[in-house]
Length: 337
Image (tube, rainbow, N blue to C red; front, side, top):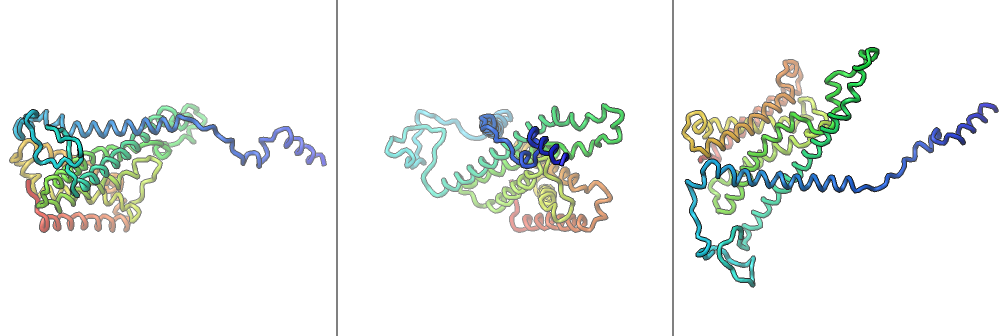
């Protein structure tokens, strides 16, 4: 009876010890910090995307002098806009020179679809990267100290977490994958812009070749995107590592394709023009860094990896897919400058 009475007294005086009380979480008041934070990341992503467009389309060509070797100077006062159907301004007068205009035909909707697709993917990617970078910085300066505290106490040296264990508890962005992801920006930007140019010019002689590179470059970025978060575990080199095998095989096929096509002539033999050398250097970096990074993530630098049958099977299938893609593209869609 005494024990039951003491338990009743404790239950009445300290209700936080009651299991039912602990199961009821307190309602948090809504805050404007999270919406404002998301809106800030959205604006930052749009700004970064616009900066990349300005850097790739205006600053680099002007710095390298491409605009002075090709194109023509337009007299804005006498421009008649004879190729403009004017449907987008109807019933207003057409006017003269315009920086931007489009005709109301089916190709305009295709161009708009490609542009909005790349813009949306770019904004979402940069927004995710910015959020993960801020989380990584927060973990580095605050959360990481909790895992280092046992090192300050000599009595807890044996229980101190190892550096590998600290990396497993990391939050935010995975630095290695982020570096790989950054090197995929230029190939995707170039392929997306070339796709728009081919549609706008009705130039379909190399459309199949360009569409292959556009899809595969975008596929590499999409396969790396889930592993930007450090909390997402890296799969072992088996069937579960299909995204990493894809990010390994596609750059390998691009490197081999460039080696037998125009990359050797432009880079090693010095036969390419300045813009062709710059383009091929960007492509080589955009393929080589993801290829080497995926090799490290898959553990291909460790001899113990090749003792695993799933790893050997994945390596064989990925290599066969890369070589098959090179052979197919070389025979069906021969490229040229």
